[in-house]
Figure (tube, rainbow, N blue to C red):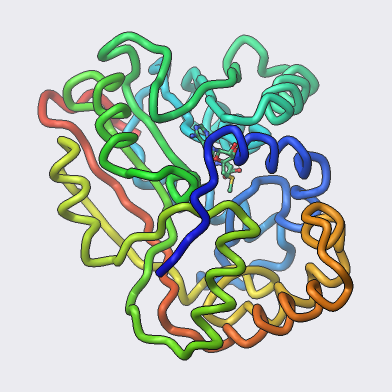
Length: 291
Ligand SMILES: C[S@@+](CC[C@H](N)C(=O)[O-])C[C@H]1O[C@@H](n2cnc3c(N)ncnc32)[C@H](O)[C@@H]1O
């Protein structure tokens, strides 16, 4: 599959430009919602928090420990983690505007002594070896050219036994129609998606970056019906039609180009190829967390 080869600077300026309104479409966090579970999620924000909590279930921490949030967005997941687990969280994002928004939000919520945010490229983390107890990376590896590099970098800053939880879109199957492939490529281009691996590659990627896999679950069938997902393309298309600032205005598309993009996106409906992995793993060594 051909994908846009956006550089970290291009990704930063894309997120800088949409930092204010992305949360309106996606809920308070900038990741997929989880709409499954015994009780249906009622709002996009419920579903978004539900996904954060599912990923958190895979992260091993003890009170007082230090966690790094890779690709932290505007800070909502970091603040939720800090509160739920009584840990300190350092968030890094490539977007300077997101750092400012996240820092203001933490101050407004009285969490400035527990969470902090800084601009950094996750492929070259500005932290010493073994300086964190745990790490999570929610829906951000898709913007990075090479998962091995970033996961090795995360392994470097984690102490032995350190825990990792992440969420990441994956391809369940390379089989799709030409129209669906075109729509997916266009979507990846617009949203600066650089790399989506086949699901079967994941255990090897984790092993080769030094992690021992504890759990890997594909929740792609439970993604937010208002956004991206095997059952949600048509609704995402409509949602973007109502928010042209995110696509047409941002990327200078003519009305015809925008319409063609949204029509292509809607044609992804029912595509079984897109999965969404929740992964829990750890480094070899004494495991310090107790949740
Ligand atoms: C889809 S958003 C997810 C944000 C956040 N994890 C959440 O769930 O709300 C992707 C995030 O990855 C960050 N990102 C992309 N490339 C990055 C890089 N090379 N280094 C650090 N952060 C990066 C973006 O700035 C953005 O914050």
